[in-house]
Length: 187
Ligand code: S6P
Ligand code: ZN
Image (cartoon, rainbow, N blue to C red; front, side, top):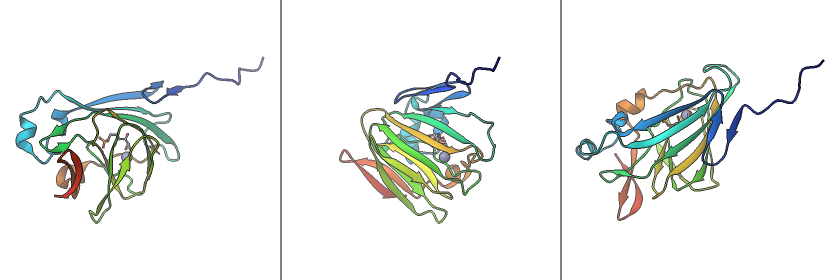
């Protein structure tokens, strides 16, 4: 007899959940983001166990596979450290020319994009926005709203992560809450 050619799906995704085989879940707490925010005094006074973001990522092929794709869902919580909004750590890809898509599902924010010359620009995120992140470009998401910012991501399975330049030098602009509005400031 022929094996069944119609398979049950391996993963499930909706606006709030990503489940399935090989779906990893990571939580990023404030204490893991030391040195990322500008106001270290404010940072040290906050509860380090506070959840800043959660990432679910589906790796249908092993990390490092050339030609495959990964899929992710990030929930970035609202909050500030001093006057700077909660944000993801941000990274370049280890294979620098690899691009990525982000799309906003819920909430509002800014996607910071910094090139190799440290020029930073931002794209507004709100439900329905689609963002192409070119290669050689560091990417970070900032939650400028009052609810959870949820966004999807799709990137090459051999892209990898390079956080080192961000840990060392950050982005060249920060997003601050000034008069209740987000302002992109120079560092
Ligand atoms: C992976 C993709 C996202 C981020 C996630 C957390 O290429 O860009 O899944 O990993 O949003 O951000 P970060 O900067 O802490 O990895
Ligand atoms: Zn990425």
